Image (cartoon, rainbow, N blue to C red; front, side, top):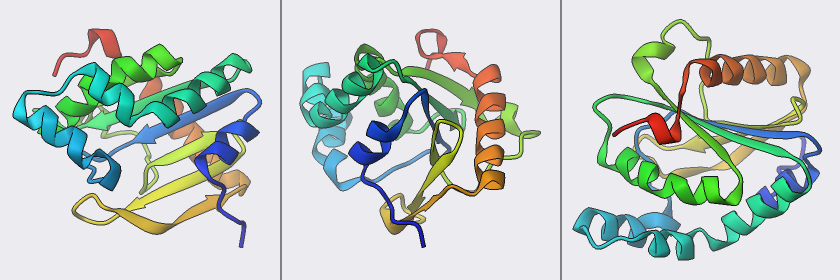
Length: 173
């Protein structure tokens, strides 16, 4: 079994590209609960998000400064959930750190073969699958593989999604 790297190790290993495909309409990550509650209450600001995501944003900035292209695509149901509205509001911080972000309505993804789980694909060769419970909690362990056929599936799926997806600044929630 291949050891599962941390996100720092994963992105630090990237030489050219790191792509992330998200396909859920709801995530219940423990570290976001307070920030999401502020968003739901209408008192959230980008500074709240910046504080919550500080470590992640620093990692992305460090990765992009090395010349790695970091792209994130989200396949979402419409009308979007309150959580997706929250992610959309957070996305300018990802973009500020150097990520490229796009959104694809789920109805436009019906003819794309998609893996069953969200994933990170590093340099088209290494795949980290994130697993979640039905209610959006992070489920462990994650799965990490260098299997060429799996990396190919994920790379092809991501590129099809990316081609059809709308850039963040043009996608309205």
